[in-house]
Image (cartoon, rainbow over all chains, first blue to last red; front, side, top):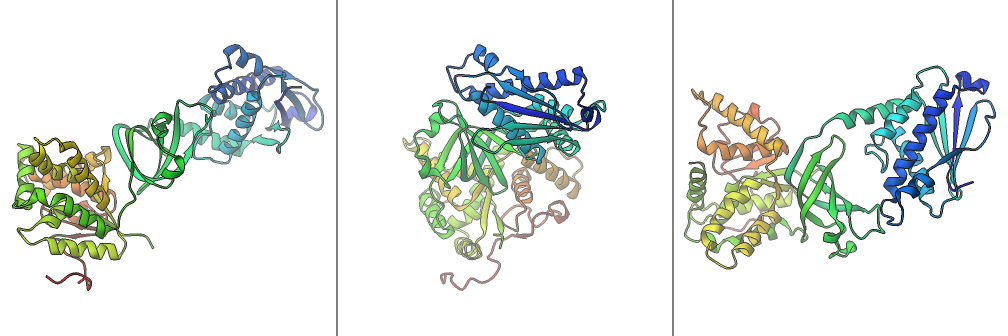
Length: 290
Length: 171
């Protein structure tokens, strides 16, 4: 038995009689195999030693047991593998689907459109072969992860798929200023690539993707909860606004308003000596528009 | 309690430096008042654009031009959060330009009343961020139909602190 163990149980309908049509089974088997392979690719992409052959070999699933109990239960398992990625992929798959079923705002890592479409199929069987389906990712040292593909789950998945269909507005050169609150580095072993930074701005959160190389000059503890000004390509997803950062600056702590105004006057006073600022401002507006 | 959202038009920043029309004291009173009620100050990127025009005029042939421009921008950024000119602002400013044309019963909406194009950007930004108070010394803030900018709580133009500030320095 390999490191990943999945248990799929069909409930209701013909499953009560310990039967299920082969085409339904084949569809579920193919879909889960394909999903696990896709998630494996995502979670292992930082591991330079993993080849395409490894992905194919490690994610191959086997039917491991007979139908049993008051339902139709099947056990899948992977082969023995030289690394942990298949186990990580199974865990991410199970956890990700749990989050989706719970109405998560953001799609968990590895859970994309194809996984969602498969999940929708699982939750909405076209025939009465079964009423709902249950998937358990068995884990050795942690509690098993259980996902129930039922009607409620189907509604949550449908909403995620609707959100995916919306083409969000995008804009280049967008600027975000706010307090840096969280850093999520999913590939911490990889020195290149990017990290996701959550920035709390006056009108809500932004998720900023910053190149690791640019962040490397900072001690992360020093910039935690600091004011950041970032510029880049913004995508206004309905529930998750993201900024692919071209440049950013860690700003000094904001002074008090009174101190800031004193500094402002000090910095600008000399330039405006002897100038009527109001007339000057009017002249700029006229001049620039002619 | 939620901090009041306050919008400074470029003219407020100008007012802080104004030694000709004597606006500096009133501008400082506003700052003291808003600081006292822990307001969050916002302005538009247009303020930066308008303001640093002077910096370029004065420093265009100096070796420290870039540093000076950055210093001026930072001095504005320390006072206020700078709102970008984005698609929402562009749309809102265009809507306000159109409304201004109808309000003034202009025969043609184009060419626009030139100065209002700038004011429309400030006004659109203040409306979009739902400013509780807007301070300004110039522009058509008081003439503009309020129904078109319903998210702005109060427009104070010409600018003065909402109540006498006991801590302000005597003139």
